[in-house]
Image: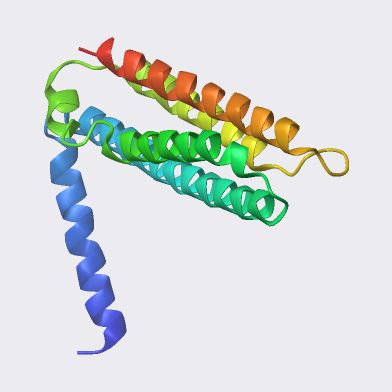
Length: 169
């Protein structure tokens, strides 16, 4: 058997199964929703990874402040770091095991697309939060305040995402 022949047979078998699958009522819709769930999972994982990077950035800010005697900011930065850890964990665990629920509960494509749009907004906000400051060096108070504001925005977006999921049921 040549590799080309094997590939032709494999493709023919796949095509036959796809033709048969197309005859099953509701399967195409299920597959479409499954694709959206997979897309949502990938976006959530990317968002969680970026939040972890922001956490590392905060650790870098802590190191910078320690080098310049900024001990008074350590508690604030530790609290922000802990909040980011919780947000990343929340995103990673969000909707774990919901595939079967979504598949059988009549969740519409539009609702899943709304969650994906929200997740994209979350990614954009994370990008803004990790962007370097626009102008020159900031003093410690300004750096910590900017980080606090960014984490608060992310916290609101993750909470809003949880509310979106509760409207699915």
